[in-house]
Length: 338
Image 1 (tube, rainbow, N blue to C red):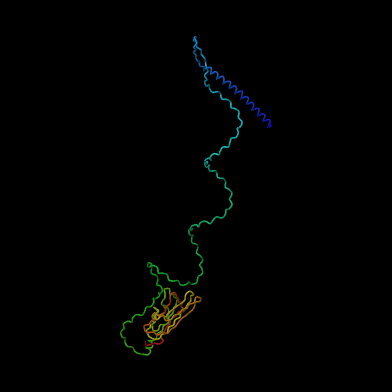
Image 2: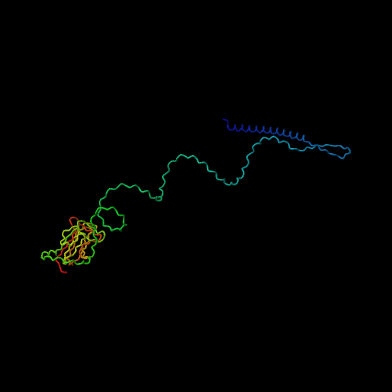
């Protein structure tokens, strides 16, 4: 390697040689240019005639050089680079240029590593109800619950179209017995019979005894009890179809009834009715017990044409079964001329 100082000496010597050669060439070019200008002036001399007042008329010609622009000279060599000038004063800041156009979309870089898990966001708006799911499988059959209270009767719905005739159902409940009608026209007199003491006594015997075989509930308000089993009906004054005892012999009568309760949800409440008026009642109320019985008895003086029946109050229940826990009985104690 050449030492730095020797390199600087060689660089300076080369610069001086180039400067000398440049000066020699410039002098030669200038000399050639001066000669060309001089030749051009000689060729363009213009003669001028001057006339004098001497007796000897002589004509004297004088020549003047008229300057004429010559051809352009040969371009000179470039001058040496001058020393750098003094730094100028810093100019004022120009106006900011317009924003450049957006560059082309760069190539997507490789996926970065997963970021740190952010905080839990706020609860979003409640979404719309989804579509109902499919029906689930049937559940296991539960235990049978206790018997509920008898609900109130609902309003009567619109009359539907007549359905197919079904099988004959059990006998329905009869309506409330109306008041007795007016006596009919007296019939013709019968053939006189043979008078005996036995016949006279037999015509005065009146007695009956009836019972229920099943539970009944008064769902439609107060109802006349229609008895299902007949123990006896001496004289035939008790009507099993209507549940009414018709007095055909005036006199003193004894009546008694017994009712049974087997449910804790409801209880029996009955009345003995004479000609539509309440006479005596029986009730067995107790929400904490069951399998009870209650009853009542009465002696009444009745006239021929009077009627007696039993009523079960609305929404109440009478319990019975083939053992016949609920009964109603009555008989004539003795006739009376009333």
